[in-house]
Amino acid sequence: EIVLTQSPGTLSLSPGERATLSCRASQSISAYYLSWYQQKPGQAPRLLIYGVSSRATGIPDRFSGSGSGTDFTLTISRLEPEDFAVYYCQQYGSSRTFGQGTKVEIK
Amino acid sequence: EVQLVESGGGLVKPGGSLRLSCAASGFTFSSYSMNWVRQGPGKGLEWVSSISGSSSYIYYADSVKGRFTISRDNAKNSLYLQMNSLRAEDTAVYYCARGSGGYYYGEHLDYWGQGTLVTVSS
Image (tube, rainbow over all chains, first blue to last red; front, side, top):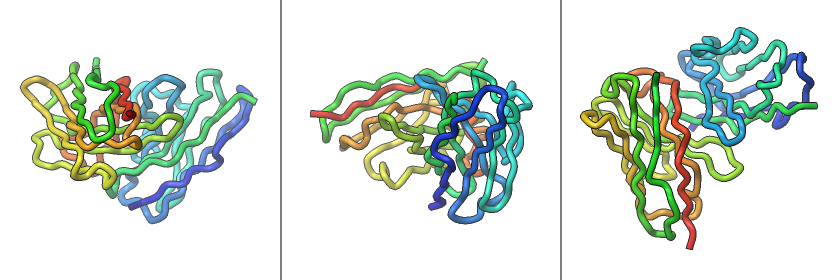
């Protein structure tokens, strides 16, 4: 099973700042099968990024994904108030596993 | 508009059974794989099971294999999860989620329902 480790566990930032979230896999992820989801309290997860760097429908361009092999990054260029949430990475190249999440909180 | 609405959650005793349903609308249900993902209280997301559009391919997480059964009825646009021999650690919100294609492999989860809570406790 591919284990995904997200860091940091919590990111404390102010609106307007840049957020950089990391997702590291225990083995190489095939064919760029990595996605990112956003989850707010009491809500279902929402797809942000798939295929490492493709934005889902309706996702603003301040969200971007990058990486390859075992190291992946979600970047939020300038945090808006609605971006404070928990973010999960997921691989879907070998079964499906999620990272444990990174909480982006208001500083 | 894609909509997924889960139902069937509730309180059940350890060792008991429960059947979850997910009603889908706004897309051609039979053309997409479907999935169950759960989230324990205060915890992260855990993939549970997937089924291809034609039901030809079915997959389970090791934690539920042999206890849970996923199925679908394309005529009714519905997905199901039969959960038997429930344990306290199965307590979670269960989400149904659509796969981005019809099979399973290489498909991200593009739409999610709001979830249904399953509590396993005596």
